Length: 243
Image (cartoon, rainbow, N blue to C red; front, side, top):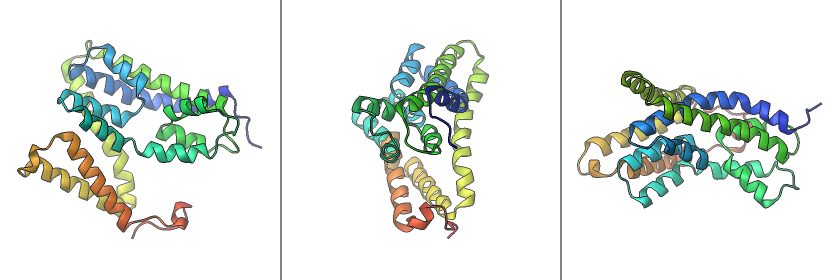
């Protein structure tokens, strides 16, 4: 028998997500302040964005004086996956959920929240999703605020070490699937190869970092979609990806 999806159940389900978000958003707050942002700015960014990768890339581009078009297009490419996740999640929502509530759910839909919500049985009501999102959101914004304040209290050596931890986090995300699935390894290798070209080879190295991210991401993902498309049985988890 499945549990009733209440606001309290959503809050409890979001606690592990919030704890995971704390360390990442803490590093984001410190990183933003170290790049010259005022103490309040990282918290405002987390309050209005709620997208980890996009926020890290965004502050890098802003600190590098990137143009608005470059910034907007880069964040669009990075966050495009949320469109697909929101379309999938919308199929599981209770039909009684109105437009404004759906907009609120779309704002709070992250990779982790989507994964937890989709594991529930039956239609997803607004009370449950609100609890799940608010709990996770509080961890993200709270960690950002703490990181911003701590940036002025911790020694520079520790701040620098925590900044490196952010890159370690992204490596930890891509290494397990790359070791398990050869196509993922090939796609990563293409992205790395293209990135090296744009970093070392003139005149490509004159291109700004935002456009480099867009070009490398689009080319490598397009290569993967064309040469390694997932068949229907693979999407259901019944096929081997090690080809």
